[in-house]
Length: 272
Image 1 (tube, rainbow, N blue to C red):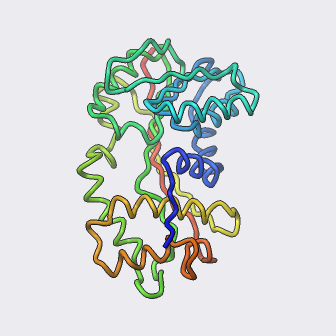
Image 2 (image 1 turned 90 degrees about the horizontal axis):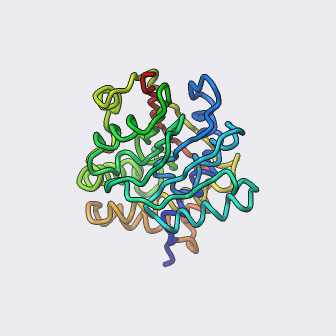
Image 3 (image 1 turned 45 degrees about the vertical axis):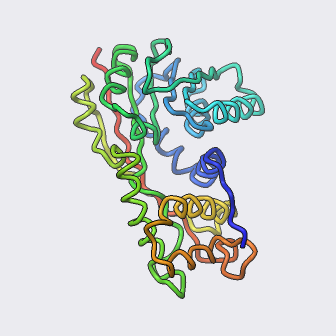
């Protein structure tokens, strides 16, 4: 039985590819009164946010910050291929440690990164101190892992995905206790004025994007890693059949996949 092996960088790239319009809508909705000239992307990963920000704000340069040299290397390669390497500066840094000098940006973007911080309150205060007066801070967090299967799937174990996510929730609570936090009060406590909070939903049928199957395979492979010890044997076997790319029940053979995802977006401003 062959299960897909997907590193985190690959999952991030698939997320950016499949949900490009969803993510672009978030960037487009930012209440940037004037186009920022310097943007800091905190926890940039492989650059999903970086490249959308560069496209939407053509006069801006981005400082892309991440702890992973692999992620930053992939981002730099993509920037070179896209002809925007001169507008991107990568910085490898552990955001739980003392920060390097990141300048005085007009916009700070933190997508799916804040919940990983050991002390998010300290991070918020540092962003507030770093931002230019009147600068904007955008926090984007996934409400949950994306869903891919219909509720009654698979046929032999209906509701499997819901049970996998429930099992994952216990694991996430241990590893990332800040996931799912309401960042509004935390932003206020750090000195920001919160301008907006909204949840944006994506529902993308697989027929609109062939990458959905690969994204589902990568996503549920990661879910299996986190939930395996908590799932009953029957559920684990059913999940393995879905992840077996050479088998008849493979996710890649299904025609009923979709991507359902929610992201909550907070925008906050440093008072001038």
